[in-house]
Amino acid sequence: MYIPTIGLEIHAELKTNTKMFCDSRNDSNETRPNVNVCHVCIGHPGTLPVINKEAIKHVLKVGVAIGGTLADKTSFDRKNYFYPDIPKGYQISQYKHPLVSGGSVNGIAITRVHLEEDTGISLHNKGNYSLLDFNRAGIPLMELVTEPVMHSAKDAVSFAQELQLLFRYLGASDANMEKGEMRIEANVSIRQNSKVKLQELGTKVEVKNLNSFRAAERAIEYEVKRQSELLENGEAVTQETRGWDDNKQATFSQRLKEESHDYRYFPEPDLPVLDISSIPAFSVEALKKEILELPSERRARYQRIGEGKSSMDPRHIEMFVSDNLFGKLFDDTINIQPLSYNLIANFISTDVAGLVSKYGENGLKNITPEGLSVIVVNYGKEDLSSRGAKDTLEDLFLNGGDASEVCKKYLQKSDSEELAKIIQEVMRENASAVNDYKKGKESALQFLVGQGMKATRGAGNPQVFMSLFLEALK
Ligand code: ADP
Ligand code: MG
Image 1 (cartoon, rainbow, N blue to C red):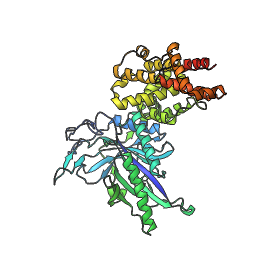
Image 2 (image 1 turned 120 degrees about the vertical axis):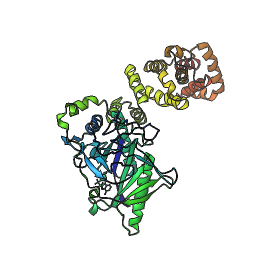
Image 3 (image 1 turned 180 degrees about the vertical axis):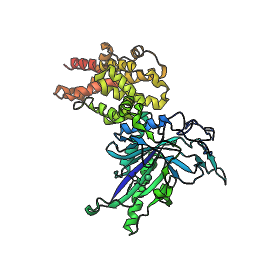
Image 4 (image 1 turned 90 degrees about the horizontal axis):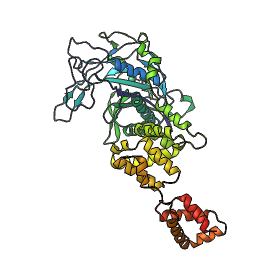
């Protein structure tokens, strides 16, 4: 048995109006090639970069949120390498003095968070030539590096998902993996499960091109297996960079791992050292004021609701933490009906979510916190059956309108005469249950009420049924 060790390097494109060092637009939705470009991001000689304050602020906010240390002074470095998508022949990055050091997310230790510029995109699928699109060149790119402290593909992926949530909560990045706004590189090694070597990590392999959480999970699992087999066969793991082939569901060797000295890092001569601590807007206190509730805080708030007695379902909690449309509806509705949190959570997670997946998000605006509380109150008073509540929600979702009015259409039948008829029928058809009850089997009554509800397709009022049955069974 081997123990896997995983460290992640996660890149996220920051949400800013303009690029990292020039005023070209930062727009990841642009579909026309080479429109958001200028002399600076295309690397014309004689042009000079200017630091984007918004980008720095995003990274510092991430730093505060993860409890990291913000740099007093920070500076940029040149990472030199040749590739067609990097027009200057170097990337401006941060090597020696990253903006943020340390911190943790969900117990996973973070090494550093720094800022750099994204590359352009090479398009190789056009024929026997390649095309270059520089819209992405120079977009602010945040890189977060973890310590090698994760030990399974699942843990690594949950960490990355939590990070995605955090970036979104902070407004730092939309972090959509499929759009390339967030990219994962996984460093994977394995070591013998022996006490002697516990402190020593094995040779790591870095896997790039992981464009989905699924790909990340598969690739890490694949590497653990591949490396284990190598060691089993008495072979050694080579330190290298590998890619992930989604079609083959396998990693493949790309290049032997370069060392940092290969990049000939040196301080970027065209940019000043940034004196972070002298800028009031960049103080921890000022940044904290701009940070609303974090995903972990929101999760903890939900976990405290009804703690001990009737805690919230963990699946509801995750849903409201990760989906703000549903989360906000939940928060606003429990503000009106604080005690009905579980009922509200149920209505949103099953009925409202069901309507969204059936009809799309458009009707969601018709489900207001006030409307949902009207439904909850009526349901609580048992004027509205669960069928009636579902129908009211669907009607509101599709047609809008005032919840109290719409509700009226679906209120339960409490008309005793009509129910009395049904009761006679149910008792005739379930004579043995009637007998059981008369012999003292209490649960038979529940059964009969259930049969009555069934006969009214859920529109009967169970309370009224119960008392009518009791009467009839005397
Ligand atoms: P490099 O200089 O090769 O980039 P770093 O020390 O900067 O290596 O680490 C890069 C990433 O690799 C980090 O996320 C780190 O946690 C991870 N890492 C380092 N050593 C190992 C290892 N032996 N096994 C798994 N991950 C590792
Ligand atoms: Mg590295």
